[in-house]
Length: 303
Image (cartoon, rainbow, N blue to C red; front, side):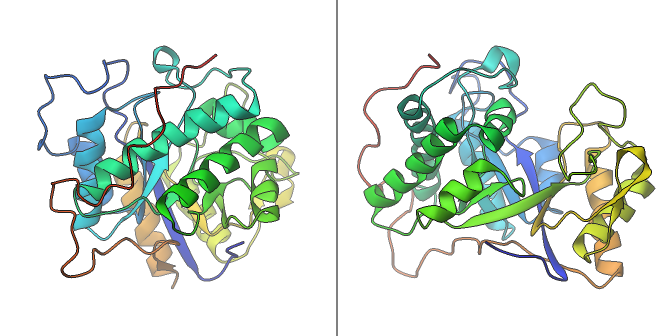
C-alpha cells in the first residue's frame, strides 16, 4: 500500500458533465475539448478519475478528458460505476461477483482503449458512487472489482493498475491479498466519524462547505495530524491521495485553494501513479494499432 508522507496526490472525478445523455451521441463531435470546469480542474489536480459511460460521460468525453489530462501531466484513472445513468450511479445494485467483474472490466477496457488510441493509458482505478461505497464492506462485489483489474492486466500483459479507495475498505484488503497495488484516499470536503469512516450524505456534518476549514483539514491529513470528527473527537486520516469533488459549486476555486495551502505548508503535490508517457517511436497515433484486443464481448447490464 502506498503510505502517507509529506507528498500528496489530488484526485478529482471528471468527464461527468453529460449525465443522463446517450452514450457517444453524434451531437458531441470527437475532437471536442473537455468540459470547461474539467479543463480548469485539470490545471490543479494531479489525478483524473474519468467517468466511463455507465453513470455519466461517453466516448468523446473520455477521449477529450484523457487527452487533456495527458497534456497536463495528470495521471488518468478509470471511474467505473453500476449501470445507472438515471441516478448518476448513486443507487446500489445487488450483483454477484462475476456480474461486477464484467461490469467494471468493460468500462476499464473502454477508457483504456480510447486513451491508448490517443497516446496515453489508464494508470489506476477508482470506482464511483454506490459501487465505491458498496465495496468498502461487501466482499463479493469487492472481489469482482479486483477480478476486473486482474483480468485486464492479463489481457494487456501488464502489471495490474492500483485501486484507489478508503482506508480499511474490503476491496483494498482483497486486492493486496492477490498482489494488486492499493492506494488510500481521503476526502477534502467530507465529514469523518471518530472511527475514520465518512459521515453519510444527508446527515449533519456530511459535507464541509467552509473553504478555509477544508484547506486546513487537507493540510492536516497530508502532514499526519488529526482532524476534528463528529462529536468533537480527533481522528487521523492516513491517505496518499485526497479527493476534491468537481461537481460542487465553486469546485475550481476550492481545488486551487487546497493546492495552494498544501504547497505553502511544504507538501509536494504529485500523482501517486506516474502519468503515462508514450515511448518514442511507439504506435498510438489515433490509428488504434496499439489496442490490446477487442475487450470483453458484449456490453454488461446492471442485473
